[in-house]
Image (cartoon, rainbow, N blue to C red; front, side, top):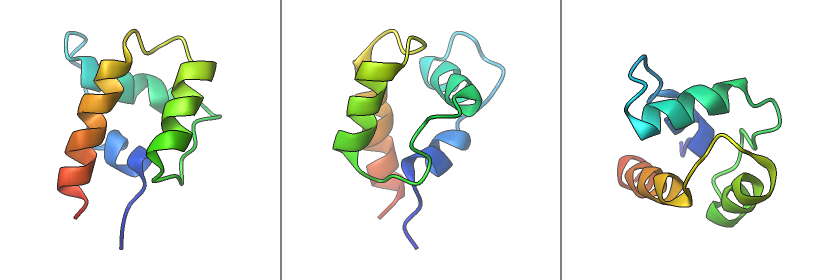
Length: 73
């Protein structure tokens, strides 16, 4: 069964405030509007670009998305 991006992102949570992916994951946990069941790059990317201020750089999302794809085959 293919898991959602959010489900994968939750595996990256942690206490390291210098790790951008962990910070992204920790903030997404608190975001009640995050598209939790989506596995669509476009839907999640659009949401992040238009609705959040906790992601300083979309490159962080792109890097995390690539890891998601590699881990979700």
